[in-house]
Length: 343
Image: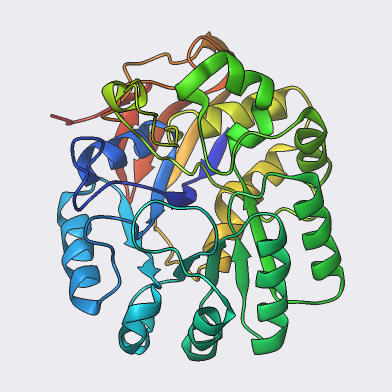
């Protein structure tokens, strides 16, 4: 089967400041191995991408060091409001952390959120880390300011049902879910220990079932929320940082679901390519495609992982559907799961 290049609208490539976990080269190699030819990377780096200078410096590095196309979000802290108009001219979208996060990007309270929504242009999405009641707040702000809000990594039944109602009412809201929330539950979190620690946390079976029920309607995108940490960090006695890698497992997981009849291959392409390109107004990639063997069965991973962290919560899982070949702008970059010319 021939698919278009996949687009992951939610990744953490850890650059600048966290290159021991991942960098643009290793992260983009993992992307290509997983069938992704375009990434949108989050701004909660060190320093965070909250000024035009920090954003431009990181974007320049991304363009020079990445093996696929990488675009960076702008971050929105309350103390850099003056930078938002300039950032809006360059970044494809804004990211607001309305709930628990690590670092200085947590925006608290209506007094800080309202000016951000007022300033950011309606033509570009405002992406939010919003959980529970914060989802309702984000939807309310979208309605009030007539701004497109994209809700990241939806994980709970109540959240996806509220988003469905908002969309039915015609509000400018889109959303994404992650494969780890589709394929893992709180029971897996107990089994995996620190390697299953994510934000939002893994939900119940009821939450998981609700996400699958909305996959062909309410949900707009599948995004990995690729968030690598080293084994040493995950196993540190004072507690592990949340996040799991996902660039190399996302497409195989969704191909497995398609092979099981849980969604069609057409819908898979919409969720992983067509819709994120449209939502974020991303450029076309000429002569770019992914060759898939939908019948291939294997135990994941079937190649040494390219992500620098070197582990996956899905290791040992039986998958159906393999990335055979990736062509980016006419150049073969992956063959049989191996990234070519990678050093």
